[in-house]
Length: 205
Image 1 (spheres, rainbow, N blue to C red):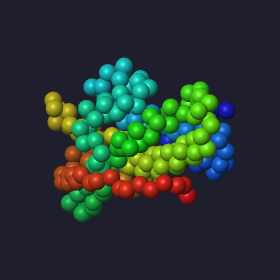
Image 2 (image 1 turned 180 degrees about the horizontal axis):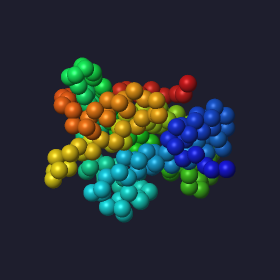
Image 3 (image 1 turned 135 degrees about the horizontal axis):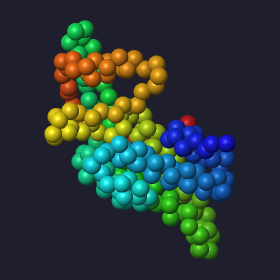
């Protein structure tokens, strides 16, 4: 059976493990979250031709975060792109949602739980509760990032002046036709807004 490495599959497994409320399940949820955050960050870096392959293969969340910051330069902001067509008049909005610095911090902290613990750590009554809280908050941030429309920020090729836009679309998404209009060179206007990240609570639905 093929193991599903999509971010949505990771999110589903994290929630399932957390619902079991056992120490073992919390550790498995932490592993799933750590892998998912790394995978999401690589998802943003993989299409970028100017990023060295060695950086794309990194496993360190800290190093992946630095590569993304260098590539996109907006850090903890949502980039909202509104594309306006004139004939007929239609607007579409596409969002790039970052892997927030808070989610990166959580991924690094839950990674510490995946090493062999000492007796002092496991002797604390709140040891697993702290991990569960971290993973619960982390999966909310992960869902937020996965809810964006773009695989990273659109980047302009300085030589060709063309913009590389990578959009997440399902097979029946109506945005397909609108993006075809862009590819054919149809005149359109582009509005860009930079928005703050939402406040994120803890807990799962």
